[in-house]
Image 1: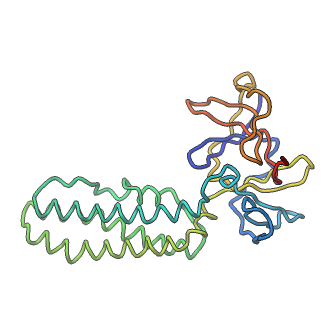
Image 2 (image 1 turned 45 degrees about the horizontal axis):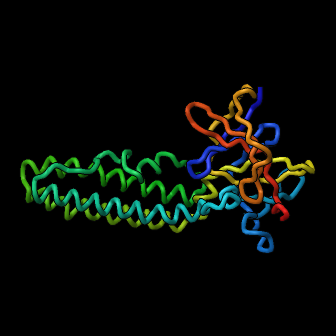
Image 3 (image 1 turned 180 degrees about the vertical axis):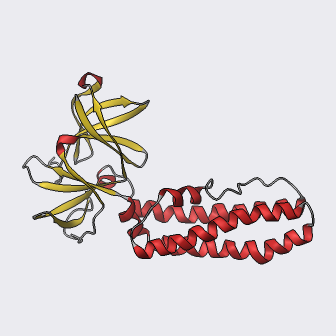
Length: 258
């Protein structure tokens, strides 16, 4: 039997032998290393040594978590702009409301529910965002009920209450988007790994999904050494619970020589 830490990066699943993993940590606060390559996110004090931390996203040529978040927030604002437009149309024309009144069912609500920050500044903004966002969706229920009784009152409630709540929701989405760097650090995890020289380094990943114990016969070995970019060697492919997992043989902190 072999044991693997299964982790996710941009909806792709990877695994690494648990014997190579010393520890799994929240992504640490890093000191920048501008003279290193872009794949090195920085360094920090780990136990009795200062170690470098790589970005797994960057070594597989993907956008950073921070860049992904910066792109996500404008989309969430656009979705709620469309939500308001659909509500206005429903009140004006008496048509069925095509969006959700459940604050946990939209993209923003799902993201809020999945994110549990520790940074006090982030926690404070998230608290206000969650409050206004929930009020926004649930107020739509009152508007739609009023629409069926008195359209003018429904329109008045929409203009005086819901549109203001929408503006406040957008304000806090904008506020939280400014914190994308802090959010990325809060949301990621860091695998502390052991390299071939028995020294430590870190790799920032999106999230740890599981630790699995697998019969080695279930591993589909790749032919020869397969490189994934300049820093990763792939050992095998594992099919587990209906999903394909790329099993990483090793990660090197320095670029492979040509």
